[in-house]
Structure formats: C-alpha cells, structure tokens
Length: 111
Image (cartoon, rainbow, N blue to C red; front, side, top):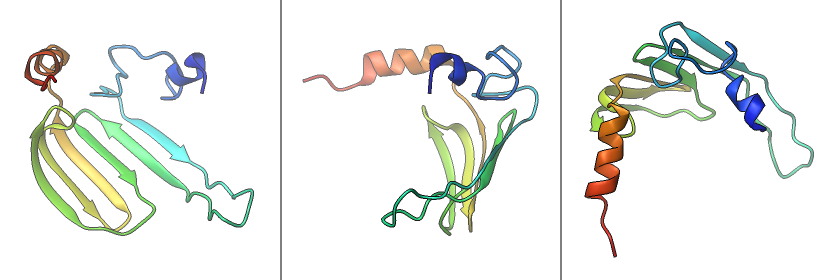
C-alpha cells in the first residue's frame, strides 16, 4: 500500500484530529470484501467489518473464540477487551503518546 493510499484508508481523507484511528471522534466503518485465493493451498479471506468510535472498536474474526480481559498496557490502554465467536471488541482509553514514548525509551531492557 502506498503512503497516499494509507492516509486515505479510513474513508475520511487524510488523518486529522477528528478521525485519528487511535480515538476517532466520528464513527469509522470499514468493510472488507472476501478475497478468493489464486491457488488451492489457501482458502482466501472472509468478508468482515471494523467499526471504531471513541474508545469502542468492534471487528470480525475468521475463527471462533472466547475471551474477556481487563487490560492496562501501552498497546490497548486501560479498559476491557473481549472476543465472542467471530467478533472482537474493546472498550479502552488509549494512553497518551508521550507516556508511551517515555516508557519505551526508559523502561525497555538494554543488552
């Protein structure tokens, strides 16, 4: 994917303060079409969707699973994540970027 295509992948044009993928102020819905494989070794990908708005995100999975977790980390933030069959969701508050940067610079192990 080119850089120009990546910045328009959210459907709202270039990333701005109101459609930031970390904490979008307007609901962002992306629909994925199914892709048929070129050969017999792959079954392709299933159709699906991703919905993001504020601290809520819901997206589809290709396999069934169950999960419920309370999280506090630099990837998800602070909140709750879960999986029900074919659907993953999260309700989290993302950590500030400055805190992430500080933690990665100062808390990572060094050889």
